[in-house]
Image (cartoon, rainbow, N blue to C red; front, side):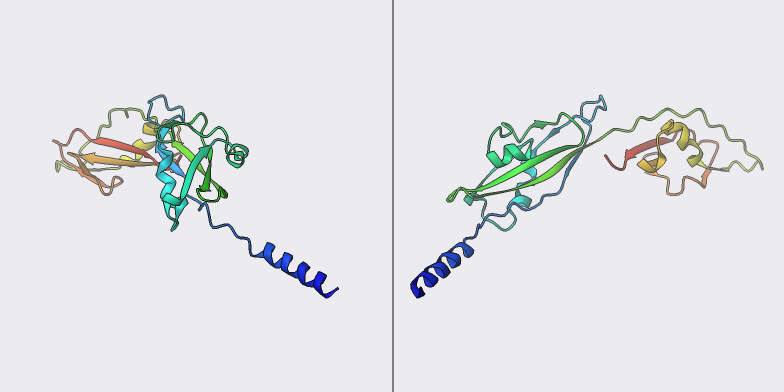
Length: 195
């Protein structure tokens, strides 16, 4: 009875000390601007950009990383993305599953991250903005922010940063800008804030 109890204890002890050394750390999502001009949410990504995050403090030469379009494929280690340095997503957003395999043991861990394509803003040329010199001093204060609804044409202004420029220099307060008779052309930059 004593020997049976001792062998049961040893068996349990051996099971509990089995550990796996690989950890697939959670990488940040990848975001790019729509780069084909169609504003369709499709872009080319370099998936290997996240490798250092996945490795963390682990030695990259001890592991192999593969990228997959499903958790099932990552777990089974099948249908890896053949060219992870030039991957074109087919939907926006897209989840990519990463398999980190320890070369010596074959043990693995998985993690995932999201590909996000930030759509380009669709902007309109604003109408001619005419200002009259109300007090005949050759200057007038204008509010460029009144043009934002026309420039964005119904797009949510909270999704964009709209900046106004004169001679390449940003206008720091577009709601209170002093113009002179010779000030005629301004530039507008619209930046999407998120995907």
